[in-house]
Length: 608
Ligand SMILES: [Zn+2]
Image 1 (spheres, rainbow, N blue to C red):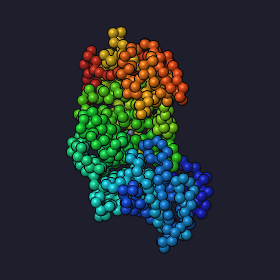
Image 2: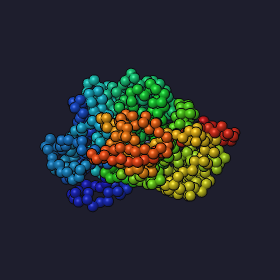
Image 3: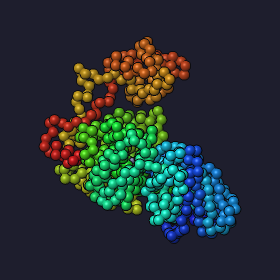
Image 4: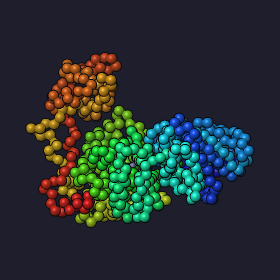
């Protein structure tokens, strides 16, 4: 939601006293006059976008404007207004108007009764990420939240955007609707749509394809000959068809894959587009390419799960305050699960590659001590202070709602298939939930459980308590048995194959110094008193070079007792430690050779 009140004579007091999280209400302003922005790039190499906007005042003596402090889909207050400079306001006669700052992200303009005021400001844009801005000589990547200052009000209002491009930039690509007959002029019916529609301008390489009569665009920015765009577009078409097969229809008029060729990672979902960050070499190796398809598949799945089928709390958005939901394990975790699964169902990854992706999720969960501390629901709720603000103790105290949610999806899938003799699965739950809860309100955690129970015929209260609300170990046996899978016994330690010796501390090479960055709770290093920031100097009185720790540990067996020499704040300490067994590789899933026909059929049906 866009913050919420009619600005009147006592605008400032209203800001302070009205409840901030009140639901959006129609205040009879539908059909309100648009805000019209013009974006220009007079010196793009300096990383600035210049913005002017004509803002209707409704004849009020003061109007208050605001900028979002966070961006939906990413749960961290990012203080976008810190990049705003040189904000001014003028009346129709060009006279400068008084601007007062009422909050870090608000501007109050004394209008002198003018029906329209013109604001101008510039935004420094040099943070490459899916919810931030980047402007350079060749292109601009603009997101709504860090770019547009709008009226602080709750009623919907049309926002129009005109882009004035530098001469050598050719195109603008965005999910916003282009206004007919006017090039580079776009319109959003409301602020939410504006925020939800990133804009890419420059000379991107664009590939188009059609599914269900709807245009899809793969937009590679900046264009690079190292990324095989034609092949990627062909595979995306298959992926879109597979998602459509699962959900039954495509819920948008057009869709854009805004593929930023960068050196960072990540992706963010929108209603009719996604922005992903892609390494320029991605199509050169199979592993990187499948991982990219899985990332894009994840973001595309969000077009249904979270952008339309959503937790009640995630809309209408309050852009100025954190919003809390217990359901990100569904919104993100199930999306992660399906992102990988639908790549496989589309024939774009092998069964082995899919099982490896699933194994990686399970291994990531099972090697995170925080799984026994934080539930899936609380990981969702605390995303703002935990997941998005990790520190050296994060793995010990918290769990990823992506990872645990994906694993819960797998367990739930098996439970439903088993209970319905393979007749129904999690796909049916998602479709039923979409039917019921993709409207204006969204679902509560209880409602999502209800719909899962209705589809499966199961009483899931105790499962929910244990797996969603609880922090106990998960039981994988039922799920593995249902699909004729097992954890690879070859990977488990045995008397003749004791596994790798393990300290349970991660390190970094700090200019030749071997510095501890994380100590895993319960691991040998943790029990022995190894601390984050300790410099590891020697094991058993032999120097360990910063790049040789793994090699040195290979000289030992699990159970060996050694003495570490560490430097802590300049003081040397000797720490006796009994090495453990490296826990990875215990969670490789494979097809059980003893699987019977029913189990094999269930697996085939699920993976198709
Ligand atoms: Zn996601």
